[in-house]
Structure formats: C-alpha cells, structure tokens
Amino acid sequence: MATGQKLMRAVRVFEFGGPEVLKLQSNVAVPVPKGCQVLIKVHACGINPVETYIRAGTYSRKHALPFTPGTDVAGIIESVGESVSALKKGDRVFCTSTISGGYAEFALAADHTVYTLPETLDFRQGAALGIPYFTACRALFHSARVQAGESVLVHGASGGVGIATCQIARAHGLKVLGTAGSEEGKKLVLQNGAHEVFDHKEVNYIDKIKKSVGDEGVNVIIEMLSNVNLSNDLKLLSRGGRVIVVGSRGPIEINPRDTMAKETSIIGVSLFSSTKEEFQQFAGILQAGMEKGWVKPVIGSEYPLEKVVQAHEDIIHSSGKTGKMILLP
Image 1 (cartoon, rainbow, N blue to C red):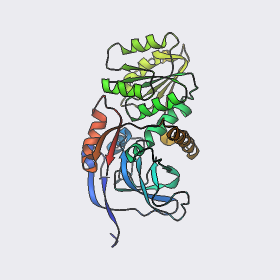
Image 2: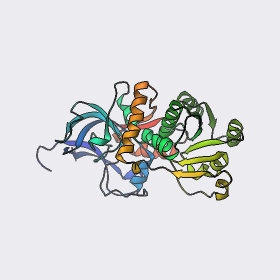
Image 3: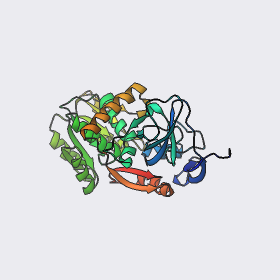
Image 4: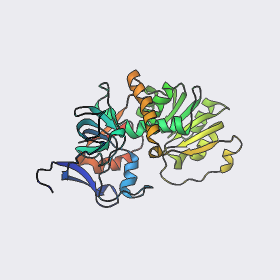
C-alpha cells in the first residue's frame, strides 16, 4: 500500500457463494480517477437482485475476484479525471454503472454513466434510479415498443423496477395494470401510476385480470417472475401481445401453442446490452420525468454497510416487499 493513499470502507467478495461471502473491510484503497473517470463520494447505493446472482457466481458474466458489488450509486463528485469537462467536484450525481463497485464509501465511474441529480430528489432516491428506471425504459420502449393507448400489466409492480415501470407507462399514455402481494404493496402501486391493481397471492387473481381486460387481452406484460407466471401471461395477451421478461428465478414449462393463435412474443431484457446512445435516450426520458415530477423513486428498506449480508438475504426471500432497497455507507 502506497504511503499517504486514502483508505475507505467497502464490501468485498473473495469467493462466489451465499450472502456470507460479503465481507466489509475498512482498509480498501480509495480509487483515483484517470482520463474520463469520476470519483463519487457515495451517499447511497441501490441493491438489486442481479447483485445476488453475481455474488453467487450464477450470473451470465462472472466477475473477476475479488470485487465490490453494486452499480447504482448517488452522491457528490469528489474528483474527476483529466479528460472530464461536463462534471466537476461538488456536483450532485447518480450513476448507472461503476468501475470499482458501489457498496463502498467512494466509487469510480466512467463519466458517460454519470448524470446530474436534481435537488428535487434526495440521494436515496438517486440511488434508486439506475437499474430500476433504465431497465423499465428499455423494457417499455426498446423491447415492447409500447404505444400510447396500449395496455400494460406489470407483474410484480411493487418493487423497484415495477414502480418505475408504472410511473413511466402512466406518463406515456398507457393503461396500467399492476399486481402486488400485500395491501401495502397494492396501495403503493395505485399511488404510482396504476389504474388497477390485483393481489397475485389470491387464487383466482388471473380470472380477475381477464375480466378487467375483456376478450381483447392485454398488449404488454412486464414480467418480474417468469418462472412462476409465464404460462399464465401467454393466456392473458392480446393479438400481437408481448411478454417482456425482466426477471426469472428458474425454469418453467410452457405450451408454445399458446403463442400461435394470437401471434404473441416472449422477449428478454438485459439492460447492459444497451448501447451508449440508448442509455442517453433513456436518461433523456428520465430527466424529463424528473423535471415534470413523475419520476419519484419509492424507497423501501435501508441498511448500513454492516448489514449488507442481511440485505442480500432480504432481497431474495422477503416476498411482498415494497420500494427500492438501499445501502447507506
């Protein structure tokens, strides 16, 4: 360790495995930004389900060990590399990707992944923007190619991506239906853009959705738990309808025939397949939403860095959870 190098607290993963492999260390070197990089003093970091798959080593891309998890941070720029001109020390920002990992007191990011955070949103809300809101934009506009006047069912609408999807879809003229697993969740979904909400823990809730949408069916389903819902989703779709797969926690058996009569589609979403230009496009949609006031992240459970193991257990095992889970360095 170079003398005089600043140290920080950060969560490190030295081996793939369960939540217990997340180790909080207090002697991690603070990274130094070079070129087009910025260093952010992290005030809040979003926790996303994908980070549990990366930690477990089951994600499609394996991280080189050791690493610090986390992509969605919000905070204040501490310093910038020599090639950065649009951002400066002291700016309030959020980002959609980090180079050094977000579960830490400081995080390094490329300047093109960093955006100004308006004063109307606090840092916790800023940390809830990255993966949830950009994924919602990709699912709606890139994958589903939604049009105003269409109907969208958000299956699992009370979590971070679900709430973001409801807000964006409502603001863009769609008829929004949502599902949630608790009274609190249902209320939250209605408060954040849904016209109707259904309890996905009720035995006959699919029949209730069918009754609501009628014979025509629903144009688009944004699906957070495909391994449970995909077969039912195919029966709910309109002619030319699309199921957009945002999340899945295992395999499911479906009947492909259910896609044939109405010529429906199943389309997967991967936010990090987005090009730089697509990220800029989604950022533009969200910046407009922040200005108009309809981008309003809802914060759920909050955890200090010391409780990161608990956070990773909760994000997978607590059903009916509402809002975005946040880590506070």
